[in-house]
Every structure is written in C-alpha cells, then in structure tokens.
Image (cartoon, rainbow, N blue to C red):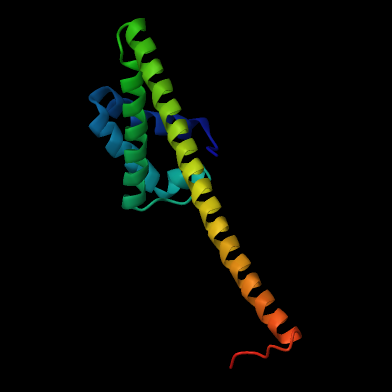
Length: 141
C-alpha cells in the first residue's frame, strides 16, 4: 500500500522514461522495483532476489508474446483461421485423451479377465481336491 501521493508520483516517474525508451530499459527498472525493499513492502510482499525477479519478467514476456502473436493478425479472416485452428487443436486433444482413456479401459478389462480366469482355475483345482478328500481318494503329498 502506497501511503502518499508523492510516493505514487515518484514510482510512476521511475517508469515513464524507461517506458518511452523501450522494453529493455523498462524491464531493468521493473526488476529494480521488484528487488527494492521499500517498493516491495509497499505492495505487500518481500523484495525478490534477482533470479526470482528475472523469472517474473520472463513469464510476463512470454505471456505478452503470446498475446501479441494472437492479436497481431491483420484481418478478421486470419483471426477466424487462428480461432478455427485453436478449436481444431483442442478437439484433437480431446479425442486423443478419449482414445487414451479407452485404451486404458481395454487394458484393465483384459487384466480383469486374466485375473478371473486364474481365480476360476484355482477354484476348479480346489474343488477337485475337495471331492477327492471327501470321497476318500486321499490327497497328494
């Protein structure tokens, strides 16, 4: 929380020139601000180390790049094509997930059948042994 108008103006001034000069200078100033204890505490968090500040900036750059590439098309036809491609990719992803699920289910069914077959064979062997014992046939040792 910034406590005074003067502080707000000072922080704003720190960003105005770098903003006009270009991304590289703005990036440096932004990282400085994230690393400065006074500015960080004003925004309710501790100062970041250089690596964490760099990671935040890189994440923001990646998000901005995706946004620019998405909005950068010049015609509505290109936008429509991109949206259709995105929908197609999403549908293909859904189909792939469905196919994988079906394959897992088929493998599970095969395992269950094999297990059932083994249990049935064991029951059959035990039943034969029980009949032999009950009929006085003795047991194998």
